[in-house]
Image 1: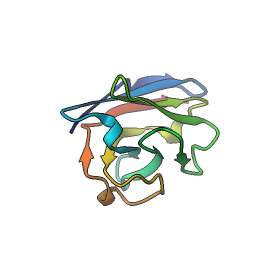
Image 2 (image 1 turned 90 degrees about the vertical axis):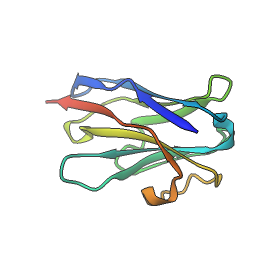
Image 3 (image 1 turned 180 degrees about the horizontal axis):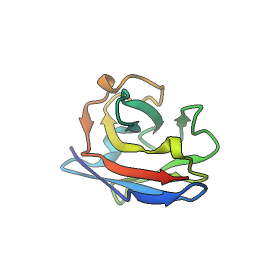
Image 4 (image 1 turned 120 degrees about the horizontal axis):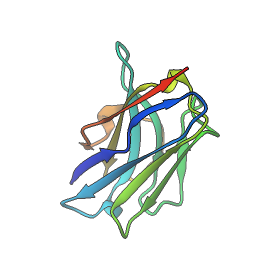
Length: 124
């Protein structure tokens, strides 16, 4: 499966953005999907994940209550709605897919496929 992330940009603190991750090559319903982010000089970190059918989600504590992951399997697309953005949310955001249907916060190495990343910059 190929993943294409989009929707990044620059926003002021307190603002919102919605990222999209479009899957092609194989239908997204075959994969649990995760979002990760990587700030300059830092390791890639787990943001959240959604199960294959979308009935389960899990979020990192740092984004819980502010970010929401959803999916539209008919459109082969997963979304990351980000609200109340903070400067510390600034990072390159990546979507990833894994065949194991789990939303547990695992390391990036547990995901099988990756998109190219989209930059999110939150200014204060």
